Image (cartoon, rainbow, N blue to C red):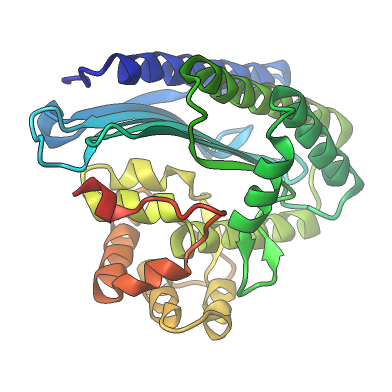
Length: 348
């Protein structure tokens, strides 16, 4: 695999690779402390046979501790194509869906983008996503997670939290995806060292605090009830819905290329409620009912929990690409903070 020539991109890649290792180690430690033997497996992918980079992900699914977990690192560049607007993009994107309903999911994203015109910036995201969001444990965990991020980024936390709340709101359902959000888009102060340090500090805080919350969840709660499992399934369906209808990062990644569909959709939980997903068709703004229909059609038919298999992910990706190619203006209805995130146009 050919890496980007930019020294800044090389520095960003070193950072996200270290964070990737930290996340995998932290999650495996939590599982093994509870007597499990969960072990992540590495998968690699190449962009244009490695000519334009690629990446790897450490993944585990359907284990004693994890419903699904994926810790992805990628670097895409166009050093040999100077006409491209994008010079390089280097990213960590990770999602952990624990198996126990009281252990919250977490999403962490840190990326460094360099444009051909010389512009460069970070995207920094961290959000805590409990399935049982109204439980006392979840509420306390949200406060704990937010406090850790505030300590990591005291000067910018209030702004990042406000923008995160905006980004992760789901208008069709009138609620947020999670309960604690941090989001900075196109972040660049002019102090490169300080900006890199901020990205590192926020990711460290999110990774370590979530692992500690997981430990407490597993220590404090016994085997889940049927009702808790049902509520977790409903929440996983909501997560699936938000990622595939509102998340600009997912949309952009799938529209730019089809060489890593399974990796880009590694954030999806293992099962969703197909009927519940279909019921949200009437709640979305036009033309998104067409996308909901396509997503439902891509899933196996069945009552209750249906699997989101690895073989289903390329079908979902194709459905999403078809929708946004037919309705390009629909991207304008997707999630955003104060700054509109770049989408496929910025890669051309």
